Length: 326
Image (cartoon, rainbow, N blue to C red; front, side, top):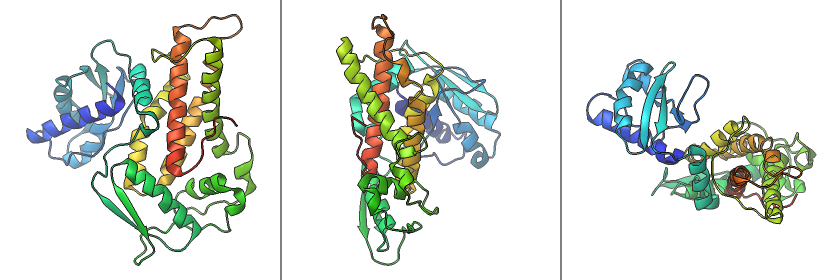
């Protein structure tokens, strides 16, 4: 079961508890699932009980205990344990590895991984001023909204409903990709910086880190082919894996939130999170010295390629190129 499927499973459990009169809440559109934190257990954890506690008028632990039996009876769920203030820890049934399942889902969906139906059938009207940043934000939102099943229509009529803080100067000298990043990465209420820092190929430049991480994953695939092996999803161990897997699993939620809240900056910042989690992991993928390629190397390569796919897909939604060589 993938994180997206598990999120739907959690929502089904909430809906069943509501239908049976055990909880008096509105079923949320999304349930966040992630790898368990300190003190947690199982394959995944969700904070849905903490989110529902206030509207339900009950302690989060009580909400979690109400949801527990409804989750246990769901297909694919092996066990459910409530920890801390109300975190629900879920162990999947069977022997399927959650990391391998996530990687397989990303490989199957490609750059469309994370696309969903949060805005299915909806028309989002974007009315923007005649200003460069507003135009770029609206252009990105057309793609992001479409990725969630909706359709965005842009125009310049009144009343304006999308007015990010304008750029202090013309971003065109930065070039198309750096200019778009400079306008999209800050939150709408923040004034963008139009400086040459966006062109510097150094660690301090977030756009460079994102594109460099993507290019490194492509280089790993090329080098692995020269060594005679390819990627096969499987179990991946190591301290540097947890943050990367959590960031990849969170990608669908971020795209949906970016569409619903008309905030492409959320997606841009998430790509930085993915890149920063991937970069420490990538040097561990290929064999060293006389070491022969093993199943572990194939699994790590599959995870690295999944990270590259997520970065490429996210940059594409922002209208920014993801070069294979950098």
